Image (cartoon, rainbow, N blue to C red; front, side, top):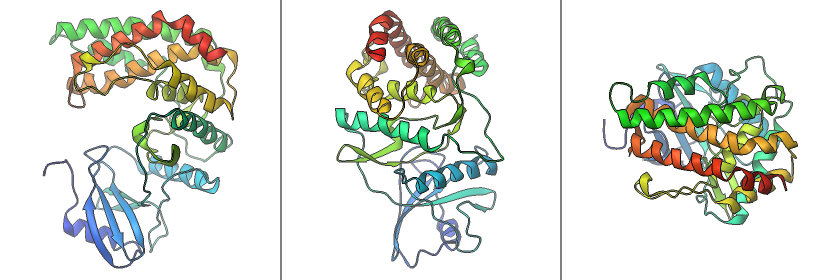
Length: 338
């Protein structure tokens, strides 16, 4: 496998593109972004610019992909910013199932990455609320499993097994995170989580899945994690993703705190469209702890690493941030509910 992970062979590329009416191909360049097991090509033709994606084998079934495409179609009708799917010329289907692989072709959307500005942060909160509002009454025969990072037996299993018999430091860190995770799960459940209305949520609302122009969202790029859950799970995850402070090479050097200003900016953008009730707002600090631990433990339990980062260093950073959230709960709750 060449550097950069999975790739398209010239023969595969030609066979796949023959199913689309995009005219004569001028150029095709690999795009190294996102999952390395999901190769992507930027294809320029006489009819425009497109992005071709092959989904990782075995990761998704056709029902889940079709469900995600139906969601994108609905959002497109509502003029929500996303990269439009391109249908095949023969079956007029946005899913191409060929040689046991699933392919998708999108119109290419240009844009820049999240710049950290207050305007962009508030806009992503506002667009998340639009996403939820546009899909409030969305229904199809097939539904994805109802699941979330809250009170998850899967998360607990990974926390329990991480480092067992191999790395005592990693095991002790996972045990500490289990204590935080359990305490937050109990508090959120006591606030009424199980009684809150459920609907389609995005499941992975973070800057890496978005393109911007002039501080405004121009395209939401990834719909692989759509599921059924209370919308506040998306809200808490988005507030975490846009306020977390990191990006230094070594997670041991990441600060403990979150950017409270961005956290509030994101929430205020959301509340321009949807007003969560008091219990949901009060649950957000604990939901942020739960989602942060859940996101971190799954890859570390599987590989010992988070991406290319040391699993121990990454989980210790998560522990410090969980401690900060817990210690600053009253201040954050006041900022969130005011």
